[in-house]
Amino acid sequence: MSEIRVVSKESHETLETTIKDTVSLSEASVVLIKVHKDDVVEIRQEGGNAIITLKNGEKIVIVNFFKGGNYSTDNSLVFEDDDHKLLWVQFTDSNGALLENITYSYIDKIEPLLYHDSVASPWAWLSVPLATAGILWWAHNSDDKSHSKTPIDTTAPAAPTDVAVSED
Image (cartoon, rainbow, N blue to C red; front, top):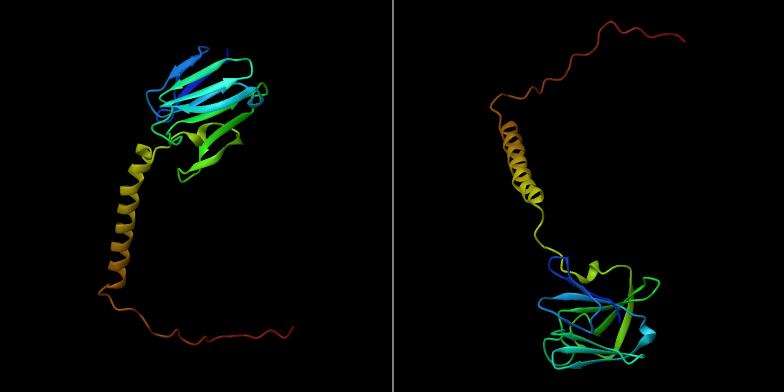
């Protein structure tokens, strides 16, 4: 039996780790299966399920992997071999179009396949009004100085007197 780990794309948390031959998905996930690509005979879609057949006859069923026909999915499938190399299994291109053949791409880690919050940390949000306030304060002070009512001294300096030139 192959070890299967399901990681939530939203929370980045491991939802399940199992050695069963069936795993069910309830949210967008990365499914990481410890199996070498050369041990995989077939990957096919059967309804909403992904069926992975291995050379030893084992069938791994990922329930609710697909959301419709033509291999459409929000989930990602990754194989991990004995050397911990990760191989991302791609059914569609970056635009969601079905690929003619399933493609495999080596990746260093699964994080690029996870969702990344567009919401920044509270500290980042706090910096926006502080920066805005600082800019407004600077603009107000700069504006006050440029429209000051005190006249600007434009008198040229007096010519130097008592100037001695050395003979060196």
